[in-house]
Image (cartoon, rainbow, N blue to C red; front, side, top):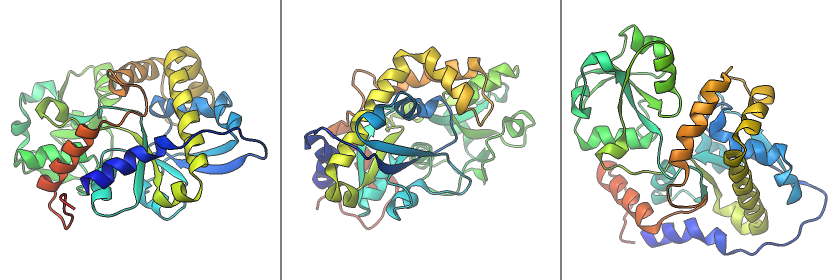
Length: 305
């Protein structure tokens, strides 16, 4: 299964490119959250005409409450989606998902608490009130961290509102390194963060993906989507001011400030490529993540097949 998984993740890069002519082909991309710099590459690929250059008319679909991105793609409601290392988990269970391009080589998902809480180690969260989803595969790196250290918490459904943390209604919450710590500081509070990476869980963050069926039926479409998206991300990070201008003008559904978007861009750049370029999927890293899932989330799959 590991070899099949690795081959599937890389196979799309073997297809060659060809020139494309009109008319534009309509496809859709389901985002995993609301518009912000996290999706800047796809926004800029749209705004700068990179998708159009390769014959694609890409509809960006902003996240809506209770939407499952993976099911959205599996049921063909969307052609492509953005998710994270849980793609590997579902692939191991036989779901025909294919990772095409890593946007974030490391995951920005972490636990956030107030510095004044006195928590200094992830084990300090044992028995505490934690705002986190009950779905064991969402924010899977934080779920893995809790299981690895046998931490039992009183879980409450996520609201993503810092007020609950500030008002001591919860002791910690799942958050994004690029968003909530900055927002907490702006409110006058010092954050205490616990990143899965600091405890050995080096998982991928955002990954562009599709299904085996889409690749089999139109590999050139997938290759064009990959290449134009990669070009969009390279542009977004090298033209941050222009990118933020466009987000503020046309995509600012969350009412972010310029300063918060600048902070987000800076933090996400650290997570984006390390020493690798966009789209790089490391064989050893994927295998390590898969083996971690097999240990922490026992299921019916067999890594040896």
